[in-house]
Image (cartoon, rainbow, N blue to C red; front, side):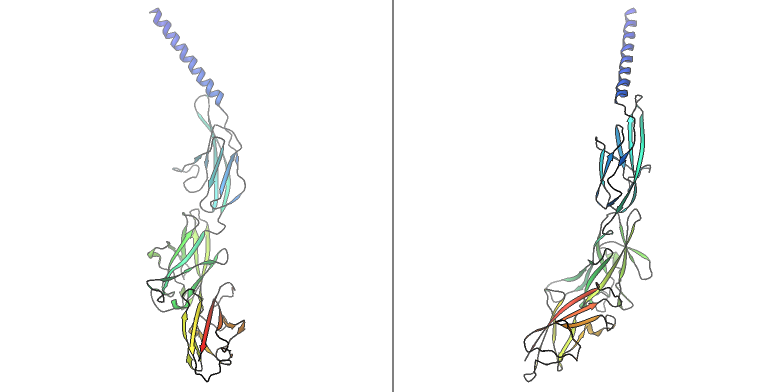
Length: 361
């Protein structure tokens, strides 16, 4: 019995020593948590790396960037563990103003976790606004090509929030499909997968559209019989709104051309959308050095032309139908047609076409 008591006392002493050693080990490792960190600047671009650098102390560090699914204190949201050296990098997928939270923590000698919190505001902007590209899809079926070939208009940025979409004149026709006068399907790419795209309809309502979805064939570029600049809106998950303006500008076409009552044949150069050829044959007794052509651009349609927004020239000299004489005796003559979007004075809303006229006897 005496031996048993001695063994029990010895075991108890060992356990007390182990416990003291463990507490001492934790006490030696313990660093009072102090949350402090910094970033390199206040404003970043979408997808740009934000570098978080620890300026405090602790054993563990967790970062909550503050964007969707990573908000500190929000149930179900998560943070990211920083590297052992107290650094962390993150790229925000959309513009917005975010409250990034840095949590420093340590385990004290009693095995309890202690922590401290610091935060900073991170502003993220989209230098391109959020819309990367846009096209009006399959506006017109082009019969001059073999097989099934459609014309789609690819938007070109002319400013940070404005695009121009060239439109073939052949697509200017009364039809519910394959016509710019029909409801259009728009394809686009956004800077953030979390953002959404809306078309602002004629009465000012937001209509959500999905890129390439047939259910989104709702966009109307022709209103009240005329081409209209359309307003699109990108809204991010954080509520940042960016407006865009898409102008459908007609590529001009010389639709009729005649000399002395002889009509020319108009064809498009199939290698280009903005080049046309006109051929006609005149009687042998006509002096080709001094003829007066009669022509029309875009059928003189008053929904496209107001008398001021289309100019026809040869080598910079303005040509007036039925008035200006032209010398065809030296060979082909090239007309230049400059067309501005009707009702808008922006000089960037312009399309140009070249028309080569061949006249022979």
